[in-house]
Structures are given as C-alpha cells and as structure tokens.
Image 1 (cartoon, rainbow, N blue to C red):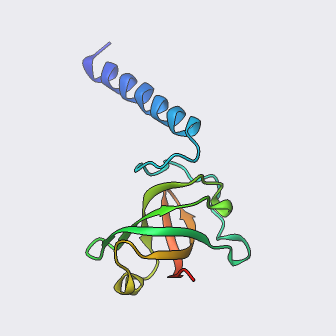
Image 2 (cartoon, rainbow, N blue to C red; image 1 turned 135 degrees about the vertical axis):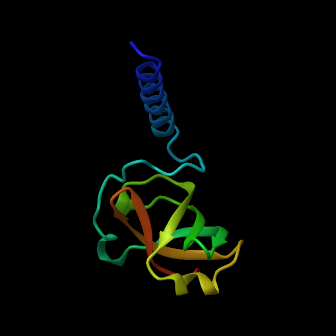
Amino acid sequence: MTTTHKLLIAATLLAGSFSAMASSHQGAATTSTPTTPKTSAVAASGEMADGEIRKVDVENKKVTIKHGVIKSLDMPAMTMVFQVKEPAMLAKLKAGDKVRFSAEAAGTSLIVTDIKPAQ
C-alpha cells in the first residue's frame, strides 16, 4: 500500500469521525459547514429561521450566521457560513444584527435566499 493510499484512507476515516461528532452534538454551536444538506428544497412555506450575523464578507459574497434550527433543511442550531443569492443583501448587514432568513441547498452549498431584520 502506497503512502498516498494510506493518507487517503486516514483522511476518509477522519472525515467520517468529524461527521459523526457533529451529528452527536445537535444544537451545539459550531463553525463547520455541513458536507451534505439533508434536503435541496427551498424553505417550505417561506419559513424563516432566526439568526445573528457574525461576519459579512462582501468580497466573497458570504455571510456567517449563528442560527437556530432550520426546519426546512433539517439542520440543528449552529454557526456557519452561507453564500447569498444576491450580493446586494449584504449591504444592509453588519455583525451583531438579529435577522430572520430563508436558505436553500444548492449542491454542497447553502444559500441565503431572503434575509431581513428581526422584529
């Protein structure tokens, strides 16, 4: 077995371990991005999740949100980076803002499709 094969096997086992640990810590805040969202549907019935903006990355069209449960994606509460559907969404956001947002899965990415200030 070559060194490359051994490294590939080790990386695969390690990735599986991290995935299992993340699953066992539902509700715990993390900074990781899930590898495969459980559904690719748009948020059901316009359902929105609560969140708090942690970071806005205009250059890369991304926003980091500490969010509650996202039922439409079967996702527990955590902190993670999302891409945004429209870069203009980021202009009104800053760290610390409380928001309500909708997200959808697109391949291995999660995209914020709607975001507004929480009331």
